[in-house]
Length: 175
Image 1 (cartoon, one colour):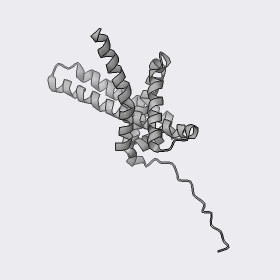
Image 2 (cartoon, one colour; image 1 turned 90 degrees about the vertical axis):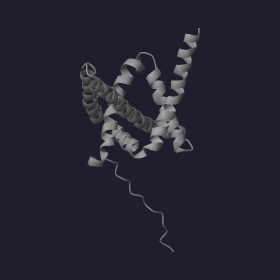
Image 3 (tube, helix red, strand yellow; image 1 turned 120 degrees about the vertical axis):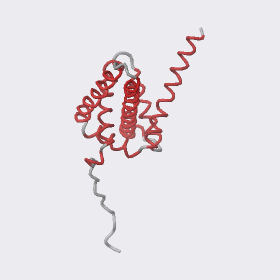
Image 4 (cartoon, rainbow, N blue to C red; image 1 turned 60 degrees about the horizontal axis):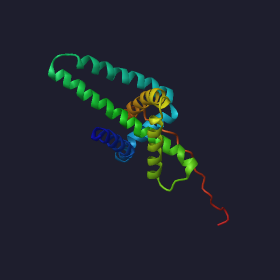
């Protein structure tokens, strides 16, 4: 019976901590997640293509180095796995930022933190949905956020941002 409790409470702990992780990454690395969210919003197909390339590079490197029977090279596959998971988590934080921005129009939250939490919860719940979430949503979005995060990390090269909308001042000419 304790084995069941261990599994259940571990899953509950992970479900509670994922939105906190995504919000923390948005707060700690706002420029990276903002650029990656802009990539997801404006160029999702390019993000998917870059994500396919980056994900396949990580997987190929990890699979090749994990099968070499030499300790330091196997350690490189271990570190590459953590780097890949970090890039994917940055992309997931950007996706939660984008979802939070889109939910603002529907929910009228009072703060940006509320947007980030709602976006992270929607992202997490979409990943948890049986079958469709597991086998369609997670692979497609996972590859896309991997590409958006990679583009967001090197976004200083391309300087990709939305053009600001000019603001008109409401000034009376009778003064």
